[in-house]
Length: 291
Image (tube, rainbow, N blue to C red; front, side, top):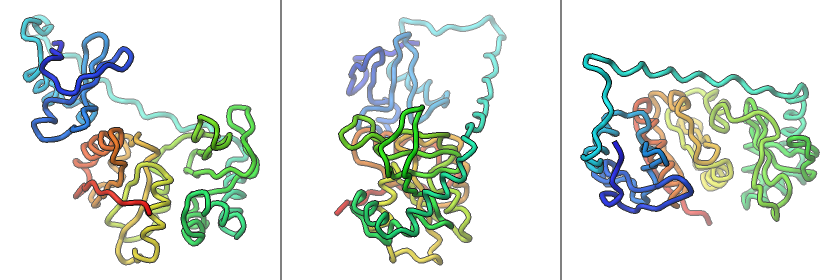
C-alpha cells in the first residue's frame, strides 16, 4: 500500500527518495527531526528506527495509507514467503604487514612526547588523554608516518583509528580536502575500542559516542573522574552507522548514548536506541558540551 503525502509531516524530497516524519513515531513524540520515514520511488517505505517491524509498518499504513489502493494478497491459504536470514559478512582481507603497521603506529603515539603533543593539539585535548588512548593495553589510536589508501599515498604523519580488523585514517589528504577520513584497509567489525573496553573486568555501563573524535573529547572531559571500580567504559560508533549485530555486545549492560544534537545525530540516536533496547538493561540519550 502506498502512502498519501498529505497525511505526513515534514515531507521533503532528496533525489528519488522522499523523507518525512514517521506517523507512528510521532504518536510517541519521537522523530521530531522528521528523518525516520523513507519512501522509495516504487512506493515502498520503511522507518529507520523500526526496520523489519511488521506491526510498525502496518500502523504506518493505517495512519497514512491510501485506502483506494488495495494491498496485494496471494491466493487463499497462502503464506508469505519466509524471510531470508541475513548472511554474516565475511571478515575483511588485511595486508600481511597489518600487525606490524599497527604496532609501529601505536608505539609512536604512546611513547613519543612530541607526537602526543601534535595529536593533542589536533583534537584540542590534553596530552594525558592521548597517552591513555594510545597505550598498548588500550591501543586504538595511532600515528602513521606513511600509509596508502587504494594505491594513493596519504600525507605523512597521519592520525589513525585502529580497529581489530581495520585502520581508519583521519584527514588523509589534509584539512583542505573534502575527504575527512578514509579506510586504509579493512572495516569496522565492532565499535571503536570495544575490544579494549570489554577486556576490562566489571564493565557494567558503556558510554557510546557518535564518532571517534567525540570519544576522545568525552575521555578528556572525564579524565580522572571515572575510576576503574565504577565499571564504566567508553566506545565509539564509527559515525551514525551503528550496526544491528553490535547490539548483542551490550547485553545486560547500561548504555548511555552521546550523539550530536543535529538531525542526523538525533535520528541515529533513536535508531541505535531501538536496536539496543532488546539487549541492554537500560538505554539513555545524553549530551555533553564541548569547552
